[in-house]
Image 1 (tube, helix red, strand yellow):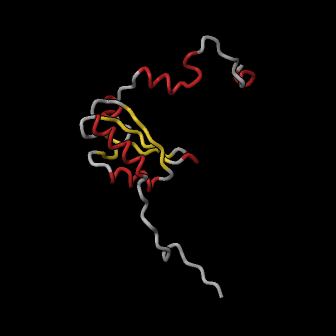
Image 2 (cartoon, rainbow, N blue to C red; image 1 turned 120 degrees about the vertical axis):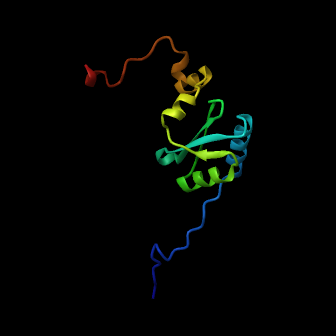
Length: 123
């Protein structure tokens, strides 16, 4: 006879923060004067993006597997607190030109661009 455990009866183990992510975020926080804000953003199958905004407005980010892990990372780093993208946070964030180029990827250095694949739909 097989019995099934209900979701309430299942023991949930707390998420652990990956040590490499925690150490890199600790270095970021230290470089930013000892405090930073973290915006936790689900990113589909990739996991959860932890976007960091330092005291000086410098941006950083790491990706972890799920929201519980992201929250564990925030709890593990002293001086790091969760935040939302609001007027105050976005006005502090400073995007460096090198960051814009990295976000643009292959498009950043292009002079000529291919035609849009959806051109017939748009026209």
